[in-house]
Length: 121
Image (cartoon, rainbow, N blue to C red; front, side):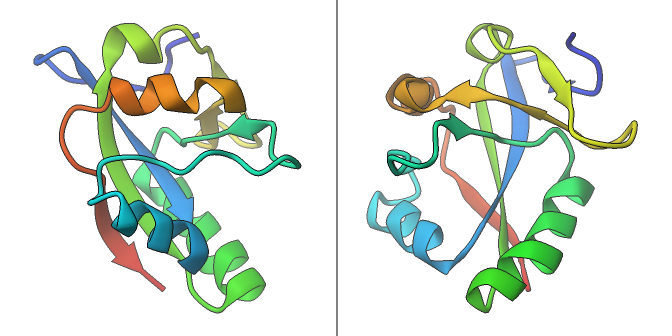
């Protein structure tokens, strides 16, 4: 269930999240220190396990839906990340975590360092 994860020797796990401009603005407002709460119709927060998968979503889905897409990279404590199994969302290299919306506050408390924007489309 942990397949495909980038677990680091420092006790963190690296994850990526594709975001549109509205979500990126909220992340920036936090000083790149927190993800915003999920909207009522968004019961799951889903970071992905690879930068390539995040870039595909940002370029193909976020750009079409909102005019731009961005890939964020962040590190979270591995103990926290291991609570959530890796889920296949398609092919072998298409995996993500499904974190319930109510756990996003706790996710933010386990972030190790800032949320970084690594590419934009």
